[in-house]
Amino acid sequence: MEWTYNTIEHEGFEFQIAKNNKQGPDILIIGSAIYYPRVISKELSENFSIHCIDHRGFAKRITDSKENVQEYNLTKIIEDIEIIRKLIGLQNFILLGHSGHGYMALAYAAIYPIYISHLILVSTGPSHGIHLSENQRYFETFASKERKEKHKSLQELFKRNIEENPIDFFRHYCVSQDALGFYDLRMDSNDFWDGIVTNKLAFDHLFGETFAEIKVEDYLKQINIQITIVMGKFDFQVAPYFTWDPILNNFPNVKFKVFQKSAHLPFYEEPSEFKNQIINPIIKKVIL
Image (tube, rainbow, N blue to C red; front, side, top):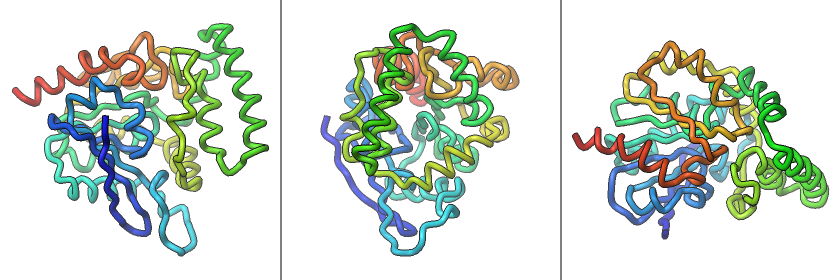
């Protein structure tokens, strides 16, 4: 699948926007315009009009001013998404946020629901804080011996890699999580992260602080569009799927689906099931 890339400059950042060359219902994916086209399945990219956009953690910083944490406040992220949405001209689109980017999608939908037909959170736990602490216990009790052994070997490789090539820390770290993030233990995510550069302060602030303290209930109360949450049963990178249970008991209209042969990337690992069980029912409702 070929993707077309454009850029937009805003407040000292250069955001990339990736668009597949297909017509169909619009899906906007927040995160990295380089990474997500690599993990989006043909089942989706050949049937939908997909827009993958950078957030400030992945956008190129092009200003000479001193970097500060205020640049990466969640409010700024939401404003960026809205500016890009206007540029693209999207209306009545599906908004998809994966992993920590799900919190960005949730926060945007709470302010701009008028433009969204449906919100999908994929592999997003209730928070990156107290809920995330459950993943270690889940890994110890549920992961296979083979998975634990691979994770151990990847951690040893990670230590060697950052000693030899510290400038590529983000890529080395992401690859070191493969045993936690893929159902298939043969997976190697190196190619997915090739050439991706990040703004470390953005991830430290958003993923380490903002998303650790986030209260998803506050956002869910504000949103009156349909929400679907998708988790992988073998996802050991974020809070386990069952940590959503006490929260969703208070939000019966939120649809919740656990994919049985997926980890952190259900739309990549079970593409047909994701399209048929998640996307297609949404499209039918939009058309009706």
